[in-house]
Length: 231
Figure 1 (cartoon, one colour):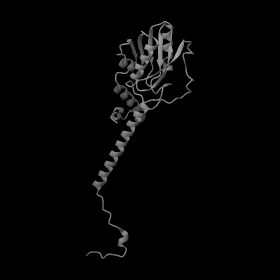
Figure 2 (cartoon, one colour; figure 1 turned 90 degrees about the vertical axis):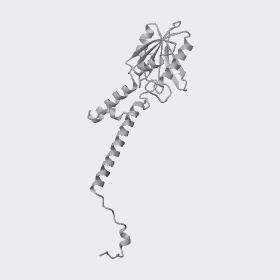
Figure 3 (cartoon, helix red, strand yellow; figure 1 turned 180 degrees about the vertical axis):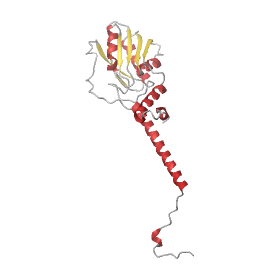
Figure 4 (cartoon, helix red, strand yellow; figure 1 turned 30 degrees about the vertical axis):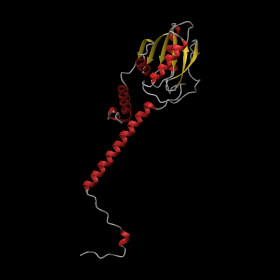
């Protein structure tokens, strides 16, 4: 027999449908999948940020080693890339010398990192140009890469050397990412020799190494870092 409507039925609202156990399990699986996907994307973004975040200045611009400390005759080198990024460098010089070596630092480094080897080359009789890649050191802030965009920085450096020392015999010396830039940009006809120290074989190899290192720190080796590379 049907229940007779009561005076308070309009306050109760419609009946709430019952959810089956299978429905709850399905909802739980969907929620866990969404949470896992969000975590996967977040960790991938964090890895991207760690690799490509701007280099923070941890010291005043003048609180660093310069050629003055190494007693090398030098002059400032200022030049601009083809895409408008202003770069800063030092030119260690010998008047009348035609052999010039362009020395390049690593991924998150700066020109002072290679000042020691640059001074040694200068004392051996070479002219030396060392400079900050885009987004590093005293060069203008700009997006940077793991070597590809920095080839434009090297091209601008070669143009500057050609103007400063016409007819120069130019060699390249790069460390880590600087070695990659030397290899990629060394196809320029003005380059007579290349030394690439500790250059990585491919960007993927460098990314895998960074991902595995961070995964060991966060997950204690229980989850391989390479699973986050697609993110």
